[in-house]
Image 1 (cartoon, rainbow, N blue to C red):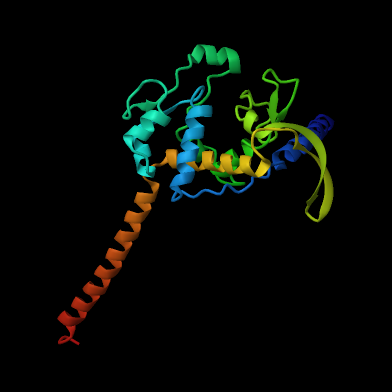
Image 2 (cartoon, helix red, strand yellow; image 1 turned 90 degrees about the vertical axis):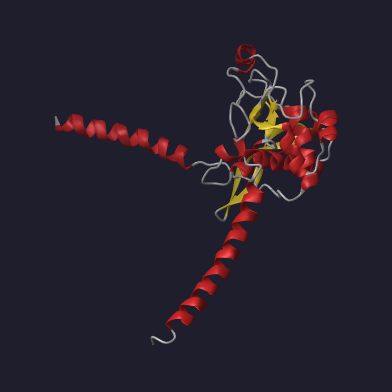
Amino acid sequence: MIKTIKSALAALLLLAAPLAYAAGEHVHLDRAPVDLGNYASLQRGAKLFVNYCLNCHSANYMRYNRLKDIGLNDKEILENLVFSGGKVGDLMKNTMDPKEAKVWFGAPPPDLTVIARSRASGDGSGADWLYTYLRTFYRDASRPSGWNNTTFPNVGMPHVLWELQGEQELKPTQMRADGYMATVEKPVLAKPGKLAPLEYDRAVADLVNYMVYMGEPAARSRKNIGLIVLAFLSGLIFLVYAMKKEFWKDVH
């Protein structure tokens, strides 16, 4: 009986070692340059979103008319961002049949309204994850779509921005980690796209910036209102304290 228990414990320890190693692995996330006050960036990001993301994904909790908050008017929204013949007040829905999407990609593409908030992790924000993910696709002939991703291995989504970025391939790269040099496989540009690498990074930053805004369009106004309320309460506390001193000055 004791021998059996020892054998079982040894097996568990052997199994736990690779599991612990896998659990310790994590993907380094690059910091996304999010700036919700940069309306030009948000407008460029919205254009990228409707041209490259909205064909398959949806944003069912976002209306086109919220784009007026980032400096666009109804005419600009209709002419440049609404391609389905809809109205400015419509939700940002796609036209893809979910059943066909499941056949093509293995699962229907998720709604992206709050993707920047839901992808937050201990290693970085959801914006950091998206910014890294959209820049780490590489060619992989073993995948059905012909693409893979180091941030999201074996992803079913193809690289929709490949014409802009070009084609990357996995190549051994020397990197310093914890004071030691290690060889890791990283995506390296093999065939240039329409944009230079820095231009592509800026385009992805604009797209991620818009997706962060889309997750909570009222974020900036909420924060501004919060600052106003705090300033008001600070002034009110001063007045209340002054009144208290005036009322109680004869008592003490």
